[in-house]
Length: 95
Image (cartoon, rainbow, N blue to C red; front, side, top):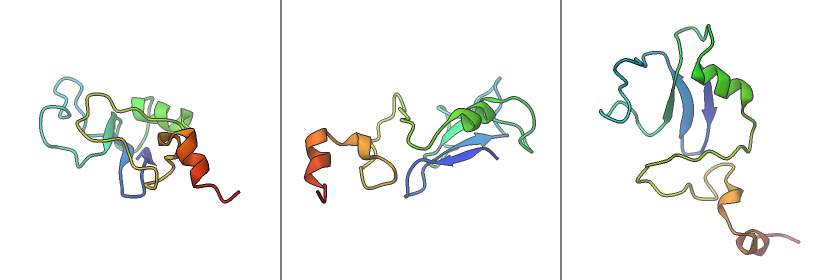
């Protein structure tokens, strides 16, 4: 229920009510399609990691995923302008 889009191609950070702290499915089995899963409860009730992240995040906050074999998100795939150097950013400026 707590979901925030990271990329226009469909990567989200979202709550997973099926997350089991005693036997976490993430990192050991293929239960994700590339999203970042956070502990949550069905119906979005209660204090959970997903609720805290949802309540305290702002558009443009930098998200760093550690130990991922994937590349950094491309600058044109969502709000990712900070992935560019200043010279790359100004080279694309209309000014």
